[in-house]
Amino acid sequence: MIVMSSFDQDDAIRRPPPPQPYQPHAAVLYVPKVALEKTVEVLRSAGRIETCCFWYGRDLPEQCGRVEAVVVPRQRGTWGNYDVSADAIAAVSAAMRAERWVMLAQVHSHPGDGVEHSRYDDARAISRSVLSLVFPRYGCWVGPWPNAAGVHEFQINYWHLLPTADAARRIVVESTDAMSFLDLR
Image (cartoon, rainbow, N blue to C red; front, top):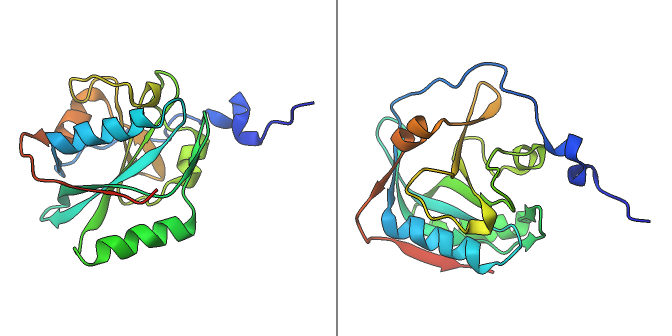
């Protein structure tokens, strides 16, 4: 007999709709195109396993930020979720401390086309003060940005999936090639 965890059961995965609508604001996260490409490469390279990475960089005025590094933590992934231990988070933090970078976004893949956060994603979010991006089909995403990708922002006690127009305003892809990459797996 197969015993399913509560996060494997459909009713435990789906979450209720937001209690209030998302409230757009002027904050922008600037992402080098090469960082977006490297992120998708990392997600695809895991095969049919959910995986994650983090975007680190500098805070800018007005709650804006600029991504300067893609960081892949040590993690355990399955077909339907991923887990990053507290020790792995500590290792990432230690590696980023010298640069004085802060986490700006957490990024992970989903197995199918759905990019809405699950209850598991909500519960395992690294921080509520960063954006959370979800790419479909284990990172087999082709764009253009942000079509078919999920951009979530925690607001009003809920991880809101931003409509495409809001996601395009919230995360702006730049043509710069400046970016660092750190793989801690």
